[in-house]
Image (tube, rainbow, N blue to C red; front, side, top):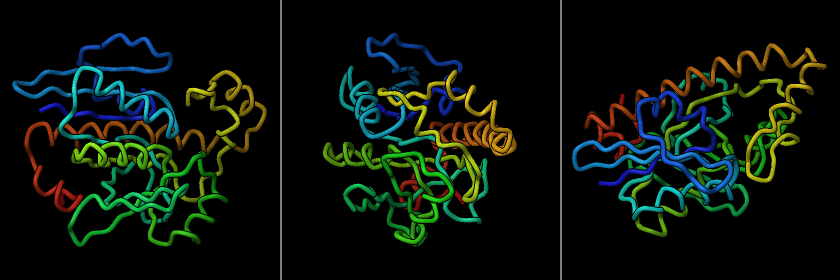
Length: 240
């Protein structure tokens, strides 16, 4: 079985792929790692934020052949107080905010919806999303594109999302610093926030939450790789 783990940013995958084999890529801003485990091949890729980057990442995952299972993995913002920063969630459905399409991923009674938007959602945008999509609990920028590509290939797909920022987090507008390949322009961003200390506490929390969430996503994927809770995760979106 060939399994693709598709993320946006290298930091989302770093705890998972530390011992994996790095594969050189020719597309700027993309990263790829491979792990062979018996008859299974695990392929982890990232290509930046947004739908276009997600499509590049999916193509990179398929470069050596079709995949049999897809994970959409990465950080997401919380839309509800009950989903705390650093936690790991398994959405049971995805909503594309651009098209209104809804993709149901599991069949269990538990419902946790993720909404995909074209921009990083700040606190004000999160409030609008909650008003427009009361069932949505998380927001990201890539999952809908990945799920759509997997469904056109009739390949099972699961989402594993780590909560990087709380619903009311006071963060700078990250969209101003995302380049054409979906990467954060770090130097301009750091210069921007250096002169705005109001954002420092939220950014410290963001960094801590993101690191904890990346480790949590790794742990859940490793459980899957070892064959634990596989059927329950696919059927219900939960390993509880």
